[in-house]
Image (tube, rainbow, N blue to C red; front, side):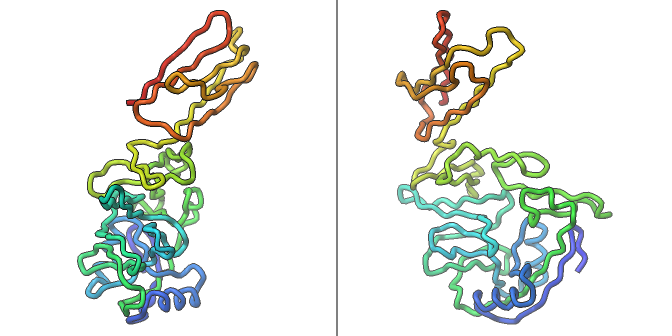
Length: 276
């Protein structure tokens, strides 16, 4: 089927449970999958053509942690309960979900209205296999599967970038300084950026990193070491003696921490950075 944003093949399977439908798709082709809408127009397409009944999606909480991934292991949503409040985070701004985490409802379906909802994977729902034709130009995207044509002549493509990324190819990860335990998401209800670590919610990444660079072309720019302190306590050496550049990170920071850089030369110079 030729669509404005790309091309795909699909095969209707009838009513299946999610596991059986997924396995049937993979038997047809290792790249065939249950529908995984990547942007609002594609979500509307599946709703319009197959939305007369509930439709299985290629998304699930397979490990029962509240993290919803595609069947190709790409994280899309995260449902967290923090201090008794359930927060739904998404990696894409267009997301159309009404998730409530329930370990007994690991599958994800599309309702008649086009919303994504959790569902018991054993239930029999309308199922289709999808095989996307990915344009060659999409190979430059950070995830080539999240890519589409952006004009009707189909001469240009655009990468579908998750929140917390920048660049035409989504190549700049704004969460790269966070530890692996931190989830960087978008609050579906408020539109705020979320940072979740160990069950706690932060307004920014709790891990703070500083990159220091010197310009060798400037006389005496390389020399004495520079130390970093947090709230008056020394953290470590931010830049070593005769070192041109370095990155130093602090794993546990808060919005009101005060950071100080100080060199060890005769004419000490300090600069305070406060994140409020």
